Length: 424
Length: 164
Ligand code: FES
Ligand SMILES: [Fe+2]
Figure 1 (cartoon, each protein chain N blue to C red):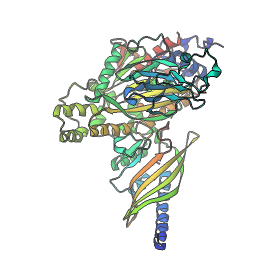
Figure 2: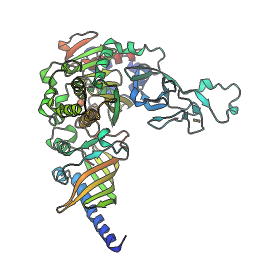
Figure 3: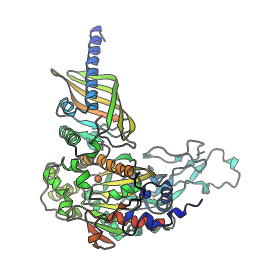
Figure 4: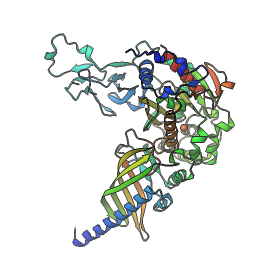
């Protein structure tokens, strides 16, 4: 049976031109399979940040869609992404999540692969005959490109170059996001991982959903000092926006004054950072650097959401990995300043723990409502899911429409791309 | 070890066990205000990720000082957090209790904890190694530090609406 079943030939029925999503979009296992094929095997998927495997021979395990991959830096510093599957009889060649090695050896019959995936040696090769070609039996390699340390891979040899897929606006926002290194390179400090019984698109929607914030995150807001709480009242002040940046990507700017962290450096240091600022001064950092670091500690004022699996979310990376139609793994990756002051990184770690992860004051409530969506869609097969909020007063932006900060413009951007990819 | 100190250490083990069981009971019953009172101000309640000892410079699941502990309880109790209103129900056992060190009034205790949670008709099982640093006071033990190492702390977890 072909994957292109007539059932899915009418994509308008799944995502309508007036921004309604069909219930089966979260529930249909056949549609999920098709998505893995048409989307996750066809476009650039985020797999790692440079700092997670910094040295020659460093590697980490990751996924492209459902498929397990190894991301590794070879002796020349070249990054390879390859399937974690032995070419003999399919055993994974690595089960260490992160580490350093000089080769990958399959534990089953001992086939040995180099850091670039090439098959180096195998025990008793004679039995394969003289015409066995080692060059055709390396680990399957994916195309790999990176931008600003963010590493992406794709199975699609014909995919456009990564920077074209991202486009100029996304690249501009990535550059801005990385300013939270405060003058230092951005470095991954750790990650929270949790699995949620929901379709992956529920997560894709949520990264560009400001509308839920004051409701779902009320208990988080109440744990903040007044000044900080004020910042998170971005729906009331309404200065922010959501903008479609093309190819399914979008930006949700909640705190516009923190889009460019190099601006307004002379603004007074917020109360919650005064202690840190003093600590940095005492450590001998000059005042302009103190200001820069302190301003960077709280993160950027926007979420940049890339289709299909990564978001640059205020102060961390949020990564989704589809597992099955009703199960998605989430990673909240904490970042900090590589070589920066320990006090600043400690503050970033505590801020991350405060909101994110299985015990944060925010993520568990997110996870609860995502699961509620999945549970709710058990009823009302024919009822639409609405992502039309804010269509009424959208204005044209640089590459796509721009709406109110709580508009579902980013979701529409993602679904537009979903449709484009599913129709190919 | 002399006869006398053996008796002493047995008595201490009995007292510590009683304390850890009472704490487990408080946590299962979500009697958090009483739990907060068990603490002696300065220490941390930590769920690390992996085997790090340097909690301050690592990302943890939580690393709570007195203020964060209180804020966490307030969040649980206020009713605005959808994941904790209602929270998962838990039943836990604490066992395999070993007194690692007893110096003056500071006692370091290791133990095993199993927690079964129930929510949405689904049960999940968590296992952890715990280390308590207890202070013996006239009014009984106080917790200075508590480190709970989930067996799969660096793996794929779910969200928690209760304490370990
Ligand atoms: S499966 Fe890898 S060597 Fe046989
Ligand atoms: Fe949220």
